[in-house]
Length: 161
Image (cartoon, rainbow, N blue to C red; front, top):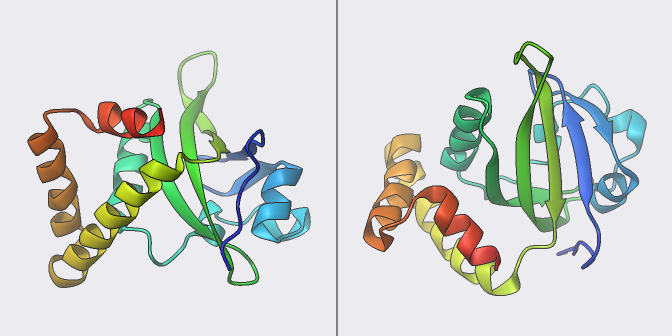
């Protein structure tokens, strides 16, 4: 069953540098159908949906480990095998010396028109990954960006408007 985040809701979570959850807000727990004790200390990918291209998460980790912010559309799964889409903003948390000490993510309701585009893109990426691995999935995305003449950030942000 598809669940939806509310129009004015924000899912907030924090992780350590290994991606283990250190904070989750009530909206996250309610939407993901988990209790706080089931989430804290667990890998954030506890909510990873199998229909998400691995290439999207590779891009995410590459950017945030380089101290860059990343926006992405993400399909998550719940404890009870339901699913929900979010528009995610993931940023590294830095200490006073500029060292990464964790990651912070805020997710909100995605633009429904953007999801139609993203669902098609992710399906193509998944198909490519099944036959050619993550590199093939990444190529589907980079080919699209080249065709559109935009960066990943420009493309994703333009879809959410």
